Image (cartoon, rainbow, N blue to C red; front, side):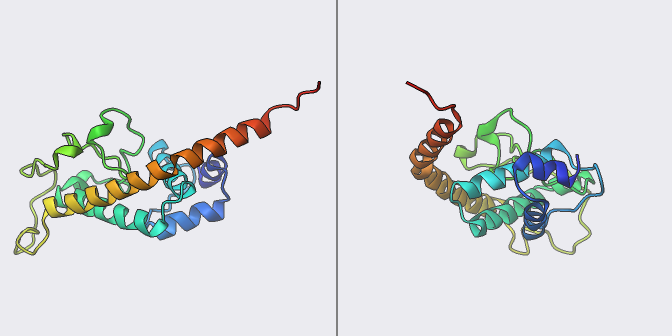
Length: 178
């Protein structure tokens, strides 16, 4: 699919979609190179914004999730969209991050990770990322804290969203005559 297809699917203008790409640091692909996973991420962002989640919070979570995936060496896949390639996956939702939708292999409520996994090539750095102050568990805790706050905001907004959906449904039904 192309950017126009994505914009039409999201019921947004291509300009709005390009703005999301820019603000979230997403790659701009050529022609028909956009995948269903790319669309799934943009749809998730649009829906969360529609439900009142601040874009700043979403960008912060996005950057934290990407950092976590880098610390776990999941960035070694070689794909320019490695950080969003799982966005359309549906199995094991309890194990998935909120925005990147990557499966961490265990329930996120457990607050743990398998830190020995390394999907990348050996680093050419003099010191490891952990030795330089980057800690995957710390980043995971920040992700989970922000995710929890977003879920709490969504729970508070749920009654309004349901009322809006009922209003939209009522507005789309044909008028009844007596």
